[in-house]
Length: 294
Image (tube, rainbow, N blue to C red; front, side, top):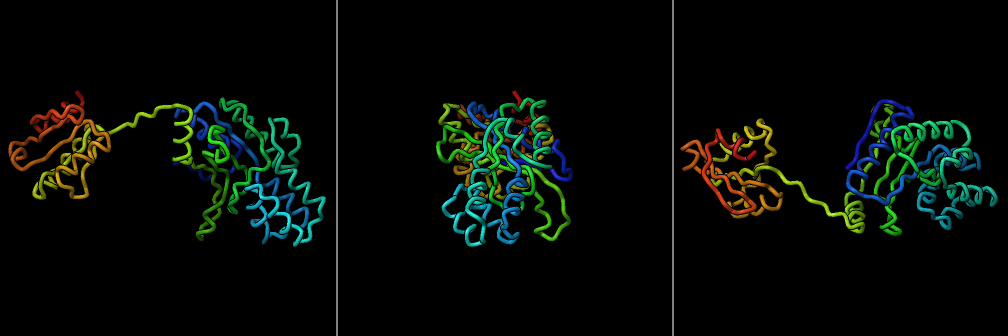
């Protein structure tokens, strides 16, 4: 899961995306995590300056992204890059630190990152780490890039990644600035588990089950009325038998199962089962939202 912002190529937009990712991670209760921010333009410029042709830039960046220096070195030597330039390039990818590192970032990229960090500071996202080795390894990234790490996961510690990019052109569209991120669902859950954070799954209020096909359309009418009343409700769309449908209601942590049968429907009623206690009673359809709220 994640988010994207499209249309504005500004430090404010990038800061908003980073802050959103940070707040999402923080809201899950994770305490020990780090935001690392870089700018792909720094490495792209250095790679161009040492003579790497544009058509081989992505190949080199992918190796640098994984810190695979032993694999990057022969590629660079084959291109004709001098040994001293190769070592300087590798050293650049290891440039990590606080905001003092920004003084080592030349040109527009450095100015841009300073602005992003300033906005983050005002938004309460502090102690970010500047890492000029953050590459993200994908060719469509164009500017700011960032990653979030949970040290508790050891070597495979990345839980979130993103940056600014122009992806629409790859699909034949016009150039549109975008910035966004994605959170690794399984990685962040594992980090929460290792930090001892208990996650209480939030279920739904009601799961509507049709006993037979002749009441299926009526069931859809009932779930629609519940939703209109502000009740979080779902409905079986797989045609499960009653037993399996009830098991699924338990899996999705429904508080109630609304069982729609022909006999009850003839009385403008349904059977409402409390999934926690197993108790059930007949409830008039008109009274169903109020009964579920209580």
